[in-house]
Length: 108
Length: 121
Image (cartoon, rainbow over all chains, first blue to last red; front, side, top):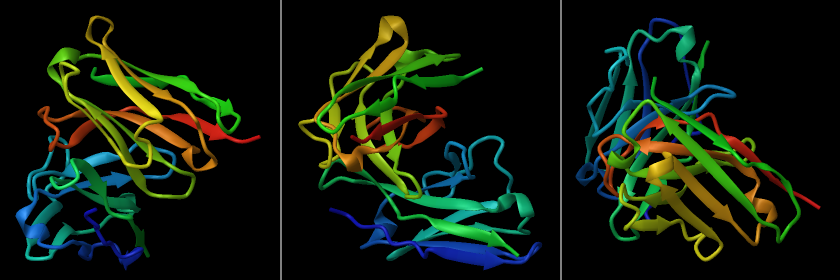
């Protein structure tokens, strides 16, 4: 089945830019979605279809997807952005939705 | 307000069964496909099952196929997950989630707060 690979952790200082990557074979051909999950809370969709943002999500959250890597970029990082971030795609070969292992974003 | 509320979780012995429910409100339930996603303690998200808006198309993760059954009652605005032959590694918070546009290859934009299932003797 299709595998999505995320770094376990990313650290950034407030005001800087954080980039969370999601690797997969030819992932650039797929639609990638990103979720934010804070401790004890349900996931929240922050980017869908590679680059689109749901209503209410700040413009600081953006996405890109080329080749074998999709990236969630968080500009001007705030303390409140500290959370786990998950990428997700649809695997047409297995008819399964697949999540990456998750990345813990730490705001130093 | 768009809302999903799960119920039915609890402590169950290995090999046991439960029926999880998800009550939907604030939107036209029969327009949307739905999913169950679970998260084991301290672990990542795992997609479990998908059901189309009509209930005619259903998919399962390999880890639960043959043991879990997804269903919906559009008249009652409710989603269900029958979980049977439970194993220790089924211990998780189970979330129901509504799809953004409805389609097996879509994404879930609305999530409930989850219901905890603990499998232990």
